[in-house]
Length: 473
Image (cartoon, rainbow, N blue to C red; front, side):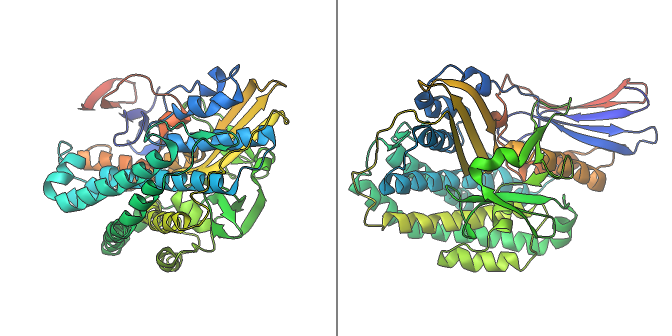
């Protein structure tokens, strides 16, 4: 390109999947624009065509090894709708239990493994140690508690779903097997210990924010709409209606999740494989919104468990809604706390060990829509089927896709605030990547990973001549 210079960060590190950021400079070497490119290709919507809807949970689980349960539950909920069945109460409890396990393990993976190295070791620490291995070496107790929390979430998934990765017990019509009483007791026995670890993580992030308040306020602070599931105003991740608020916290929409297509559309930019969802009535980009932990707390009125509700009320006093991207980390740990408390409530339900966990059905509807809140935000699975149940069309809007515009905006604002284009330093680049990591993107969900790429930053002059190369293996 002419009359500009370009800096490329490729790929962004410590996220799930691959992406790059390009920073474009004008003739005066000032930043003119910043783009977050998702350069992976997604094929799942197409190659699932021709498969029977009962196969969708197994196939879509392979989209991602971090959050397979999210895709499985989206697919089985769509299957329930295709068969027009109401699953047994215990089956719903077990699905919810596994989903909470998914949230616990995914959030703790991000907070302790991917985000905390920057916060504990420093944004300018050597990349060779600014990772979970470096964290284990310098802060072994903190790191091990994060590892145990993630293991606990994975154990819940294993006990309910039959495996930690790509569990197979979740099927349209319910779940394939009841919960073993021994497994229930093992999980309950560990909950108090896990809550204590979570509370330590919460205190750490609250202290960091308080100590670095000016930094947090400068770090990717921008206003958007927010979207997430609620159930009578309560925080919800499995059922409920979609609630949308504007940048001032005012209610925009509150609609049944199966009506999503009347409210949400997707915009295409020629520089990214990942689409940009937006609210139809507001248009693009005015109608962009954010999802995920921060959005869920912003749209919720209550987190109805004692410890989480207390933290939630403290959180709400900061702002309503809160816009700073950094608060995604804080919101994530509040959700872990609430999920741990909900796990206990579900396991103490007298019906949790019931063997009534499945109901038979057949194809009755030509469409099935399954919407849940994945760890990273609202996830939509929509299948069209023929009279035999064969999928003829599929649409998926994944959480990281919903946050696509926001991630690009975060990268732009951080670059403008912290980057010196004439004197690029490792810390500055890591700050930009950290803005993306606030959203914990799962790009293999939104696309499909291909190959391995080292990070590479290229600087071009206004005549498109290569001036400098920065490379991280």
